Image (tube, rainbow, N blue to C red; front, side):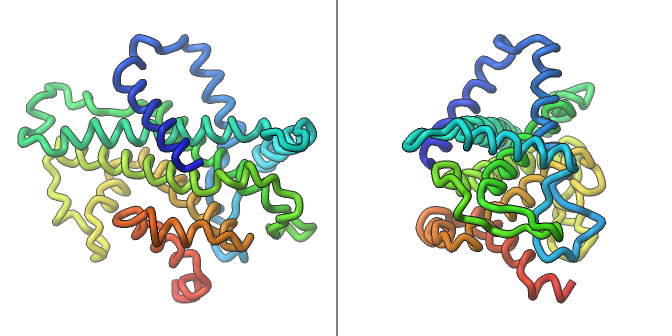
Length: 287
């Protein structure tokens, strides 16, 4: 599944860079697409009013949770023994969309970031590199929706509102996509960060001196103060990855450990480890 997701994301990234302008659909299609994505991935990916919950899961408002559960129930009811659940292609498409857009942004904006000339000097109106809000909303909803579909396949909510892993009811074919959530979330996050770096370069901001929190994160501070539209996408990537990691750990799946040690190294490994530390009981008690 990881290799499949890598190929699918690369294919979508290539389409964005070479054919998306010529092959773009009608406005009505775009509105329908964003509406469908919002119905599954809207409502936010974290609950700001209850940061001390015993679990990190948050599935949006009731209508979002119900929409996800309805699709999972339909997938389970229509899947025969040995067949692929109909929810699996949906998750694959969502991961390819989010990861592919992240790859496309990384490739495009890294070229601009490494250019010795300031983007502003090649752009008289200062708006050339602006991502439309609809695109940002779409990828935010897509990665959250993918995470919810895969995670809710493995959990249930008890009468007290607590999330409990229930491996007996999950479909293993769908659970195989849990690492793909991490993969696509990382790709999307990298693309957003590359875009923010180009924005900083265009406005001639020195990120090395922009850190306002003394944590050595000038880019993060720049996003928080100057690129407010990027914050929700970064949060979606982080929280989707947290949901997937928590489910992998609580189901006893050793996949994440193997991936961290053997396949995912460097910046991705560091990011996942930091997220895992943030979500640990020790980190919560020392906030």
